[in-house]
Image 1 (spheres, helix red, strand yellow):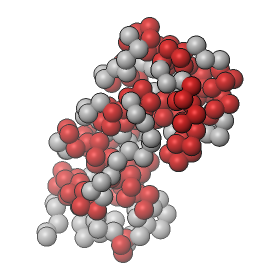
Image 2 (cartoon, rainbow, N blue to C red):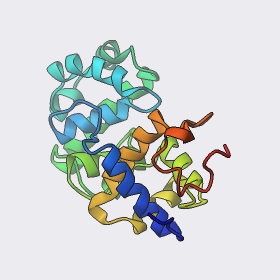
Image 3 (cartoon, rainbow, N blue to C red):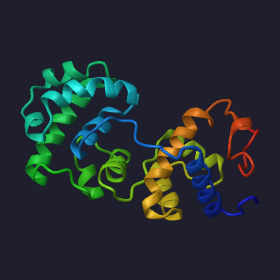
Length: 214
């Protein structure tokens, strides 16, 4: 198979190859509703999915709706999520997010980007996770793994997550954006490390401009 010669070609080939490597890639946060995923994703900032999944069962058992979370006492929320980094600020954001859902969105998780990022604790990455995973909408979550790999693969030289989201999103079918992000993140965790990437085992090494150079 020949090497793709354009950024778009490298993006699409990356998607194809990683799809064969990670055919069952999925969001690793545990959730049963868009609201639960929104909560879990807010908690996942600067934390591992594993640590979030340990905390959310007890949290969701008590605060399973915006109405219940909105009237919760901040210290009570903190107790349930104290094992997660930045738990104090996250507790405040969760309560504020729930209140805003009730007041502005009839207790429903909105699907528009502008509406989602208006919620306390929600940035574009969180919004894109919710859109692509829970709502079945286009969304390209950009984290450090995605940033690093699209740069190494010569897909884009951008370093700003918003610009990466726009540039790479335009290269992919809208229904593939979320899957692309999930698979690139897995590839970053398992193969294309920030330091000492395992280029020998990388399925992308035959067309990666930086293979064996990092």
